[in-house]
Length: 206
Ligand code: GAR
Picture (tube, helix red, strand yellow):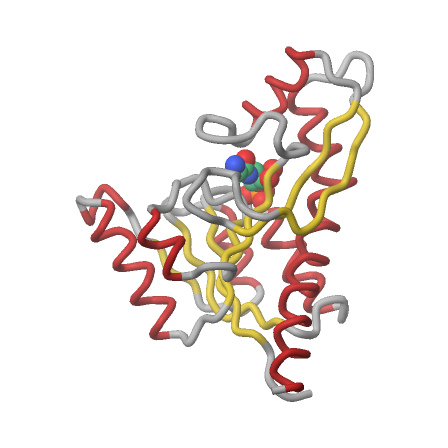
């Protein structure tokens, strides 16, 4: 196997979506991309332990230590460049990236969001809050979306979506878990393989 798309995964928390990517790489369902770097914007999160256990280089970049957003994003860019990263996956990464950053990596950043965009998305909708909002609205179907990241929070081109039923008596935690199990952990590896595979096919033709 020749070139694989060098991929960085950006995280902020538990890293179950990162784990899904690591597992997909191991079981051969991702062959076009290679997870070459994990970056966390939070100290000591479980996602970093998952990276460590998988032998993947990992870094922590703290906004409050760096001061400005420019310095924070500048540090991330320097790590991405030093590691030759071509594709960036936001997997539960809860910082919003500036337009300078998203333009630099146009159609090279993927995000997973735990709803069917355009429902329950945009600034302020992250993690459990998304599921709280879905339950408050009384929707009977929710799901997850993988999309390219542009300057509009959760506004970039949609790559894959999967629907998940809401069930009577769901709490936000129960619904979050079902959306992860039935949608997110399948969708994110599929989307990474799809995008990376298309790039490699394009390179092959060039
Ligand atoms: C996931 O449900 C992900 O979709 C969500 O945060 C969780 C992270 O879990 N992301 C957002 O809400 C982005 N707006 P993980 O750290 O276990 O992958």
